[in-house]
Image (cartoon, rainbow, N blue to C red; front, side):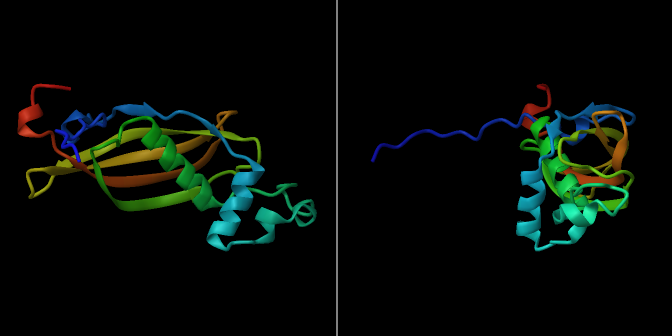
Length: 165
């Protein structure tokens, strides 16, 4: 078997030092489909009629099945990853506060996430730092679907990469 010299790929994400308070980020967009909603019901076991029963939903203000709140949250997390911000630099989700469902997301709605850096602080460990964001999931018409304050643990820039971005 041939040996190869494999090096660790460089992170394309933002390090703790790269975040500035007040900086804003916009994720790519993704359309939520009925398949997403049904697959999430199957995955989570949440078959509440508001997500799965078209006839029942005709009797509600929604008129049709709506996406699960955690589904929208999960897709938004994936969109943030797709933006590259977290790629190779995110260590952990530490906290989610004031998670609010503001408007329903239905089949055909396209969402993206807007994030604003609220604060950052160093930790007692020199290789990591904490960044807190105000996050809003926005639909194609500009309506906010969800909002929350989320705190993450990020890698600090390695000493050997201090002069590169």
